[in-house]
Length: 70
Image (tube, rainbow, N blue to C red; front, side, top):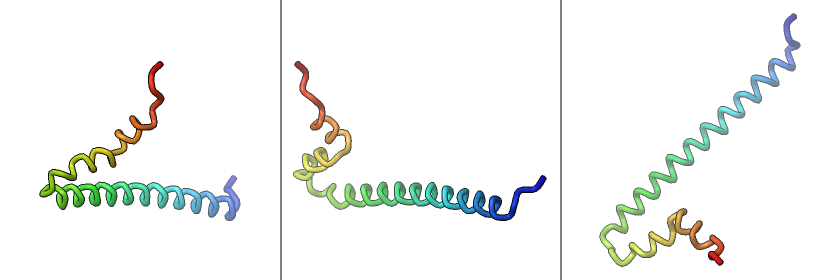
C-alpha cells in the first residue's frame, strides 16, 4: 500500500534538511581550515606570535581546563 502524500513529502523534507545541515557543517569546517591556514601564513613572518598561536590551539585549551593531579 502506498504512503499518503503528506507522509512522503514530510520524509523528503526531513531528509533534505538533514542533508543541508551536513553540507553546511562540512562547508563551515572547510572555511575554518582556510581561515586558520591564512592566519598561519600571515603570522609566519612574526616568530614572536608563535606563543600566542600555541595558546589559541584547541588542544592547549583542553590542557588548561584539566584538573591537576593529586
